[in-house]
Image (cartoon, rainbow, N blue to C red; front, side, top):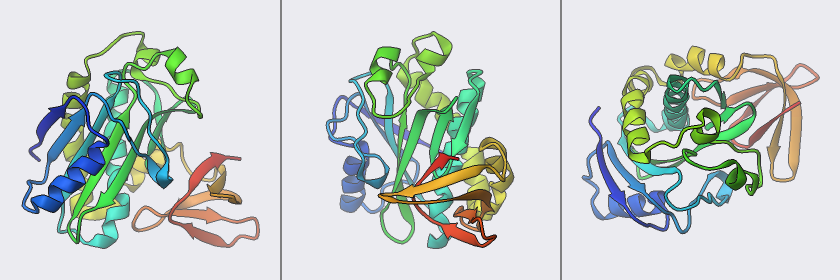
Length: 241
C-alpha cells in the first residue's frame, strides 16, 4: 500500500480536518496521511479529549478505503494497533494490545486510535502515539501514560517515527483486507496476553465483570460471565479484574 503524507503546523484535529477533506474530495486516494505538530482540539474514543504538548508526540490520521464490507470496519483499528505494537517491539519496548484499539506498556497507555466512517467504503483512523512526552508531562494526564522517550531514554524525530510506522502497517492492513479479523485473531490474542484473564468492561457508569473468552468474527469482545453465559461486547473500556 502506498502512503502520501502531509504535515501541518497546527490543526484542530487531524481526524476532523481529514474527514472534511474527504467530504470535499470523495476521490481522495486511500493511503492519504495527515499529520500535525499541534492539535487544538484532539479527540479520542468515547468523546474524550486527546491532549498533547506541541511538537512532542505523533498526531496523525490515515484515510483508508476498502471493498471488504462495512461489517469488517470495527476491527480495522485492531490491524493498525498491531502495526504500532510491532513498531514498539522494534524499539525493544515490551508493549501489549488493549481491546479495542489501545497500546500499553506495563499498563501505561502509549498509543490510542479513533476510527470514523466516511461512507460505505471509507474510514479515517486517528493515531496518537506518545513519542517525546516526558515523565513530568505524563504525570499530568488523567490516566497512566508513557512514551518512547520515557521507555528508551532517547528523544526521537517524530517524522522518522511516522515513516517507521507506515512501513509496519501494510502487511497487517493486507491481512485485514483479505481475511478480516480472523486473519488477525492469533496475533491479537498473543498481543493482548492471552485468554481467560479476569476483566471488567466499563461503559459510562455501567460495569460488567467476567473472563475474556475470546473475540468474535469482527473483533467484538466475548466476555464469559460468572454464570457461564458469553456476552458480546462491541464498545467500552476494559479494566483488569
